Length: 299
Ligand code: NAP
Image (cartoon, rainbow, N blue to C red):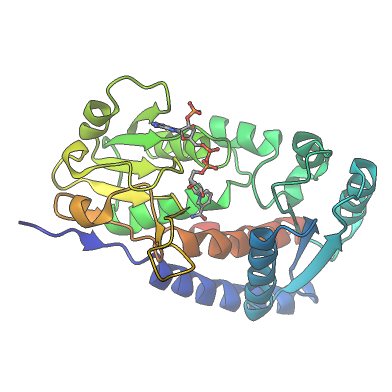
């Protein structure tokens, strides 16, 4: 029985962050200032607080400025839009990220639409999704771009391969599909209404699972040798005697690893790529905003 190669996203992300740190130092010399990322957090969501702290720490470690804005749970939509406007106008801020989810009284789409697309390092603005779908330079959401980097590192050219993306969210599934189309894959996007999902997945040379259902993708869905990218982050119920359940992906890792050619683990696969790509996007934004040339493909 074969065992899949493990795609080490943690190591890849560390290397990417090291390349970013070198380029960030060069940017500082040329621009006379550091690149800057502003992160806005509204409310006290514990998971969001952890993400924001981690983003801030990694931004500073890469040699960029981190500006954090922590707003109350009951901040009005208008007040948040004012903060975004100020950041849009601030020349020290190259990238703006508003941590989602926002409290229910705030319209997320309205806030995303208020961000200057040239500072939208999350790639969620419709201008950037439009640029991605027509093949113009813009900003691509961090998680799918991280998945693509891992796939290209593993497979080289993706041209002509059959790819199945499970999930059609705006932040993962749809941009992932657009990126794979741009790499000349034949792409199928599956979702909760897809008929006979196991048969659809079985056609794939590349499977990207972005569903949010623990260990849903089974070994007998996978074409032998396929490359499997697991975006899902799910916490299982705690085992007796423990207060926290294990983190697992959307793929039944232990069994799928016996069939696939390569697979990302959870944790340690796609997860670490997301912040590393956010730093990459911020540095790209800084160069574009300052009119300094950067070999973006080499990052
Ligand atoms: P989402 O917005 O909830 O979208 C989930 C998608 O899965 C939807 O398109 C849904 O279909 C589809 N789906 C649900 N049940 C299904 C089923 N039984 N069969 C086939 N498709 C099904 O989630 P998301 O934001 O894309 O995130 C997906 C997962 O990735 C989550 O576990 C999330 O935590 C994780 N994630 C990880 C990172 C990272 O940094 N590693 C970043 C983002 C997200 P419908 O559209 O038909 O409802």
